[in-house]
Amino acid sequence: MLRDALPKVNMPLPGPKAQEAIKRREACMPDAIKCGYPLVIKRGEGAMFEDVDGNIFLDWVAGVGVLNIGYSHPKLIEAVKEQSEKYFHAMMNITTHERYLEYAEKINKIAPVRGKEKKTMFVNSGAEAVENAVKIAKSVTGRPNVIVFTGAFHGRTMLTMTMTGKSAYAVGMGPFPNGIFRAEFPNLYRRPKGMTEEEGVKFYIDKIKALFIEGTPAKDVACIVFEPVQGEGGFVPAPFEWVKQLRELCDENGIMMIADEVQTGWSRSGKMFVSEYYKEKGMEPDIIATAKSMAGGLPISCVMASKEVMDKVTAGVIGGTYGGNALACASGIAVLDVMVSEDYPAKARKIAEICMDRFNKWKEKYSFIGDVRAIGAMMGVEFVKDKETKEPYPELVTQIVNKAVQKGLVIEAAGTYNNVIRFLSPLCVTEEQLLAGLAIYEEVLDELNK
Image 1 (cartoon, one colour):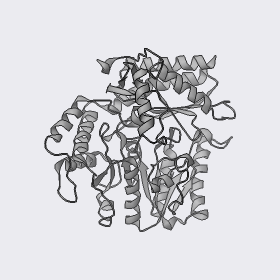
Image 2 (cartoon, one colour):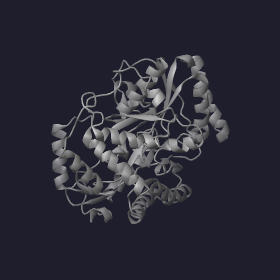
Image 3 (cartoon, helix red, strand yellow):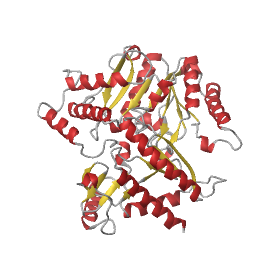
Image 4 (cartoon, one colour):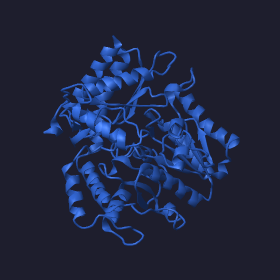
């Protein structure tokens, strides 16, 4: 079965059938939707997929975090088939459908946001979830401004593009919405030289306080939005102590704290959400936006908050035609049931234990690995030209990615300087597959090290 297979590449990539498909892509799709991989998928199961030429790949990108549950899970297929025979869609502004209610009820029971009673709304993408979270915060507080961070990625709508901290995602798109202010994200690996981690946390919190003086008064800030682990920014975890102080800062100033868990959610972190770790420490967010792995690949996202927050939102400003589509909800319910019954957070912790042990050994072995970091199985390896200067080494990362795929391992770069390799394998990956992937990765590193 493909689900239990190991990587196997039988020819230089792309193969003949893949070449044909890539030519068709060039003819019918915008070049701006880039793809640097010689891959054309035929079918996928678990953490593996087969291409149109019969090559088999271990996928450590998984649709950029969409497939925590893996490809083609039988229970998802069954749930979607069953729902498709009843109806595909019913808009919640016109007729209530029970799949939306059932999914929202399940999420409300586990939502690690402030408040006793919770409410959830569904939309279609991570960007929509973040945008609606901001709209909710503005509606509830009556304030206009938003604070975001360097290295952030929140989406490609006009608002979320403005919130994103990488200019490459917004070239030629101005003018941008006003009221967005940016502070420095707490990347402790790149904190000012000579600072302890404790001093680094204070340094980054002080940057936010300075923004209240130099940018926007705190009384005008509706929300502060951050990723518990920055994705495109380089898989940089927000230090728990920084989050604690951020929570205190928000409380002191009547600001809503929003966690963008689009990529960190759904068991990836070793808990269902990173915000569960926060809740254990009494610093949970007011609002969570999440998406990606919610429904195993069907487009759906959600915003969760307390009943008190949700019921203050002005009618008409949130929602949308496809939000809470019945097929996507049916798949989402199945995803959540499987993740709970099979303890996917534990799978993430086991994967992290194996990989971080290996990554840390590589950090000692190779002069070009500057840092390894993670929360659960959302792991990043940062490549540098010099461990002392920490100069980014994106050229090496490009070579690693290109060489690995030719051997059957699909990995992807991340980071402001594209010098980080991310780990987002499906959490259903077998230990044998995981070790096979690590072996390919290390083989490539050894080749380049020579």
